[in-house]
Image 1 (cartoon, rainbow, N blue to C red):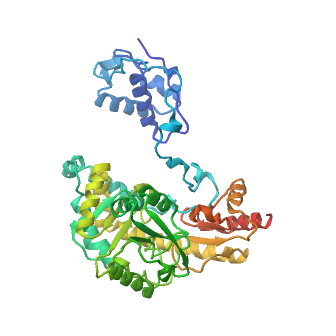
Image 2 (tube, rainbow, N blue to C red):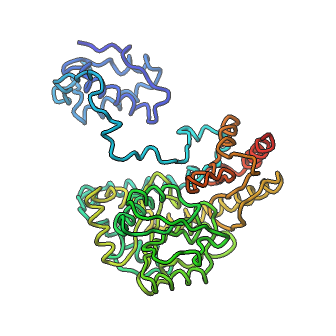
Image 3 (tube, one colour):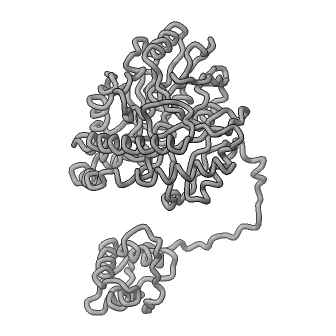
Length: 485
């Protein structure tokens, strides 16, 4: 039975190529049961005319479907659904008769109720996105990344790509991290002291799961990375919040009796404060004397404009008290979700076992692609390019903030954002809603503080995802909206 060309429709919002879309349309028709073995497809000319595209595009799509066993080509007769094509399931979906489970009682934990930053999925469509943690794709070396990904897919690496590493990691990537990345932070370790994670947040979760129980106490910064507060809540540990100042975590304010201290000394989240060297040494002395563990999230250490990055806590650690967390998500792109834990071998042994239990290991293809991207020098070029672009954007942001008399909450010299304070009468959550209607996206600051504080005067302006030439007008809109409150 011939399949009419009128049954094919292109989706203008489809993310792939026209060829890929045609392949998906045919495959979907087969898997849904609408197209059956022996059905003849429209001619390449007829379908091309129907869709208003090139005939060669249709021909290439059909050829690819033939190679995958979906179609067969029969001389001049055309293309047909192959007998070897995947068959749709023989059972019919069972219609639900209504809710049979009381999910309000069945749910043991309610993770969806934690307060989180709310970002629109279509944030790229906003002209002034001052959102932290999002990347500007124009700054990324897509061509060389693609070449590294293709190399990782090559025959030489295919066995490594398809293998299950169980609880291990790609040795090429681990070798590069230990010999090139960590020494830049003054850290010298062996491969048994490094474990790959799915980003820094996954690393924080593993550290908390291993180090904390309901009988232990964790100290954290206030304000802080919001997800860390939720991660610590899951362990049911006692949680102590220590206010930060211009030097980050106040070591003298740490109470006695803590078991683990979570800290972001390079650039505190969200204020960007950098912990001075004497305070770092004081923290390590207390850790050695009192026996607590320090979990160091080396947050945005690469992004420092006026001075060289400060030494990592881990590099100063003589007692083996520091667990170090690094990430490629900020230096490459957020969607990569690849980071690493560095710690004493007993800790990494437990982290390796926990990771194997939950997710085995990060995808092998991603690991090998990153290994090539690093070893071929593309990573260093990427960091240099991003640093230069961020420096220009930071200068533009500082100029615009001063020109419109907005108030930074702290004087800092690194990171990819400004921590700001609005007048006391301004609720920055409400401000963010009004600005969104004007094409401006900001991060209101309440979520960074303990819920009981209800601090609504702060907000964050990031420049990682907005071009320099839009910054001044965007800041002007922020100032106008604050003035209208």
